[in-house]
Image (cartoon, rainbow over all chains, first blue to last red; front, side, top):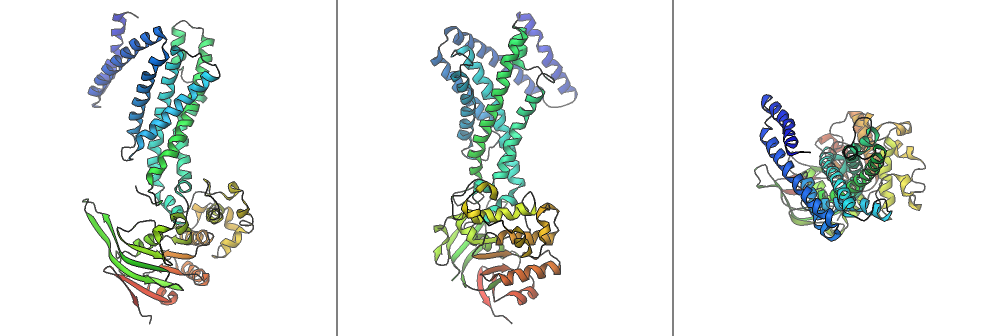
Length: 248
Length: 237
C-alpha cells in the first residue's frame, strides 16, 4: 500500500468525526487521540515485528510477550478499581489463558516454534483473554451486588464463601464466555474474521486461510474459558475477609 | 451461658465517612435454655446483635463467647452452622422448593466432611448424604407446607410460605441454636401462628427479635431489652 493510499484511510475516521460533531457525541477528542495512537502503535509493532521475524530470536520475543500481557492486564483490571489485589489475579488469568493455548499448539506441533507464529498467536489469545476478564469482572461485580441477599443467606447457614458464590460465579463465567460461543456459531455467516480476510488479501488460498481461522477460533474459545475460570476462582475471594464475612 | 457479651461495640462508617456507633458498649449474657425474646426500640441494634452472634459481622470492640468459647476461636462456617440465623425477609435460592431444602441438607451433610463447591446433595455422593433426602416432604410438613410443594418454583410461593420454607431450610441444617430476626413481622396471623408453633416445638435454645408484645407474651421464656447500648432482663408479666 502506498503512503498516499494509507493517508486516504483517514477519510474513514473523518466520517466518524463528522458524525460525532454533528450529533454532539463528545467523542471527537477521543477519536483523534485513538486514531493517532492506533497509527503509532501499529507502526511501532510493525517495525518491531519486522526486526523480530527477520532475526527469529525467541529470547528477544519474550519482552514483547511480557509487554502484551502487562498492557492487557492493566486494561482489564480497570474494570474492578475497588478490588485490591485484582491486578495480579487478572495477570495470572490472562497469562495462563493465553500461554496455555499457544503452548499446546507448539506441543502438538500445530504451529512451528517460530517467532512469526508464536507472537501473533499469543497476541490474539491475550486479546481474547483480556476481553473475557473485563466481561467477567463487570458481571461478577453486578451479580455480587444483585445477589447479595442470596450470598449472605448461604453464609448465615454455614456455607463457605465458595459455596455461597457458586451460582454467582457460574453466571459471571457464562456471561464472559457467551460472546466467544456466539462468534463460533456465526463466524463465516455474519462476519469474515480478520486473520482470514488478511490472509486472503495477502494472496493465500481461501481454504488454507480457513484452516488457520478454525484453529484460531477454537483456540480463542479455550483461552476465554481458561481465563474466565481462573479469574473467577481468584477474584471471588476478594469479596470476603478471612472470617468469611462479606466485605464489599 | 449460651452467649456472653463483654463490652461489645460496633461502629459503621456513616455517609460522611465518620464512624457511627451502632452498639456502644454491650455487656450481658443470654442463658442456655428456652426462648429468649429480644426487644427494644427500632435502631437499638437488635438485628446487628444477631448478626454478631452468627458472625456475619465482627465487633469493633469487645468480645463474644458461645458456650464459653470465644467466637473468633471457632471456624466461622462451623459456628454459623451451629448457630443459624433466619432473616426477616426470606431469601429464596433460585430453583424449586426441594432445591432450597437441599441447600440446607447439603450443609448439614458437609459438617462432617471437607466442604466442596456444590450445594446439590446428589453432587456430594458421600455416606453422610445417604438417607437425608429419603423423605424431603417431611421437612416441609414440619413447617405446615404440603409435600406436593417440593417441585414448585420457590419464587412462586407467598410471603408466609417463603418464610416457612426458609425456616424448614434452616432447621434442615440441624443447628444447635436458632436466631430469628422478626421472622413473622410481615406475615398474616395464620402464618404467624404456624411459625410460632414450629418454633415452640423445636426444643433447642432460640433467640428471637419481636416487636409484638402479644407475640413476646405468647413465646418468651425470658425477655431481654436492648436499649441505649445496654442489655437487661425484663420481668415477664
